[in-house]
Each structure stands twice: as structure tokens, then as C-alpha cells.
Length: 360
Image (cartoon, rainbow, N blue to C red; front, side, top):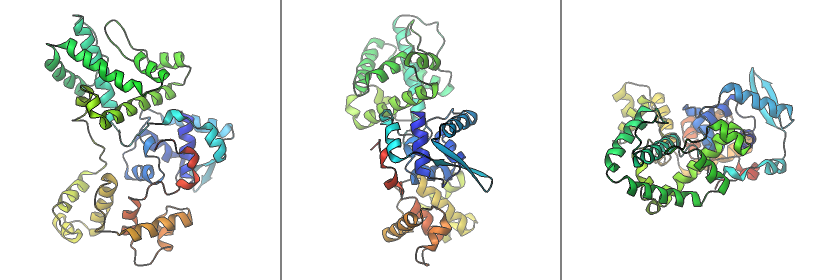
């Protein structure tokens, strides 16, 4: 799975970003550049899927692909780029349908919190149902423990009822997941006198690398979350694990203040005066806002015709450099408008990577 993600990412980025850019994408770097890349190159499903991936492990695997002749490392202007040496058919042969369901940007942070809550909920309720109160919680996160304490006070007088609801919900969710994945998910659970397998143990049992085990579990959770959100009436209990989960937001504090003033219908020049900042700074905030909130109305800054001209310029030049894009479009279109247009252009190079369209 890890190799499939790397090959797909290298193919889509196509030497337009450094070797480090893919690492930042997979680990969920919160920079505006990384979030832009996730959208522009159609890699949003891989954003933040391996937050614990070390730079050393990443570099070692890239070198492995280089030694195997699947990629080539290129040095330009003291920066390392990666060139893919595989054809589309080779990519298709390498493709892992196991990646279907992965949606990193949509479930950024949400997946981790949901999974920790679920693991602890199962451990606590099964132990207390069996009148066993002396055990070490498998989750040490203070926020998760606080949430569990609140949940336990709600259900402690009817634990059997809530365990039945939990079983029914998990049964519904696991029905849509391949048998081996469902088994791996269950193997990871800790209940009364039954400790879940470690990542190392799962790696040995299923003959997969630890990184692939992490990705497989991540994919399972993402598929569960998608089902819960799409079929709220199908999960009586687990739907209530979601309401207070954080939504993805990359805005800086300064951009948040600009966002607040924009919502009050202030113009760029008015906000500049109110905040005593340059208009270009306010425009930078607006670009941040448009990336962060994909539903934010951009019509006041750029029309659909301009967006299409920017997109055509990118496809003609095969470049995402602002200077190159600007040289191929009408002079009256500003750099600010180009930046806003980019926030609504998704996977502009999709035509060359159809072999990896696994996640519609």
C-alpha cells in the first residue's frame, strides 16, 4: 500500500515539487503549500495518512525504489526531485485496490480521535460489564480519557444495552469491509481479558510491513467514518462519537480575523485600514481562506471564465509556477486572481494518471 501511494504521488507531482513535498503531504504538514498540493495534484486522499512516518524511513524507501529502477533522483538547484520510471501500465499493475476508501484530508485528525474513542470505549464497557475495574487504559490521551469518563457516567447503569448497540453498529460497518481487513480490525481490539495485537504482531500475522498495517487500519476507519456519515440511521451508537470532532482548518490566527471581517461584508481596502495591514497581506489571507473553506464564495474575486483560462494555461505549460501561468493568460488577470482560481482547480493533471483513479 505504501509503495502504491508513493508511486501515485510521484506520478502526479511529476517533478514539479521536491522530494520533501511528498513527505510533508503524507505526514500532514499544516502549511498552506502542502494543502494546495493535496488539492492541485489530486492527492487529498493521501494527506496526513502517515503522521508518524519518520523522514529517515521515507528517505530509505525512496532510495529502495531508486535502486529497483522504479524512480530516479534528480538534483536541480540544490533540491532533490523524483522522476518516475514506470509506464502507466506498470502503475496499473502496481495499483492496490486496498486504497479505496482512504480520504486523508476529509478525515484529518477525525480518524485518530474516533479510533481512540472506540478502542477505549470497548475496553471500558467490556471490563465493567464483567465487574473488572482494575486495568490499565490502552489510551493515555487526556482528552480521550475525559470523553470516556463522561460517556461512562451516561451508560454505567445499562452497560449491557450499550454493548448490544455497539455490537450491532460494528456488525453493520464491518459488513462492507473485506474479511481479512475486518479480522485485522478485530485483532487490534482490547476487551475483558483479551488484549489487542500490537502493530508488530499484526505485521507478522498478516505478513505485511508495519507501515502497510497502519495504512490498512487507517483505510478501515475512513470507510467506517464514511458509512457513519452517509447512513446516520444505520448506527445508533457510533454516530454520537462524531459531533464534537474537529474539522480541518489551516487558517492562521491573523487570517481568522480577516475571515471574520469578510463575513461582515467589509471590502479588502476596508479590512486593510481596520487591521492596519497592507492590502496584499489581506489578499494572502483571502487565498488561505479559499483553500481552507472550499465552499467559500469566490465569485467576488474571480469568475468562471478566468478559472478556465488559468486551468488551460497550466495544462498548456505543464507548470504550476505563477509566473509561467501569468505569461499565458490575458494581462488584466492579476496574480491574486490566479491564486484564487487555483483554489478551485482540482487535480489539473488528471488525464495523465488515470491508472490510479481508485477512489471516486
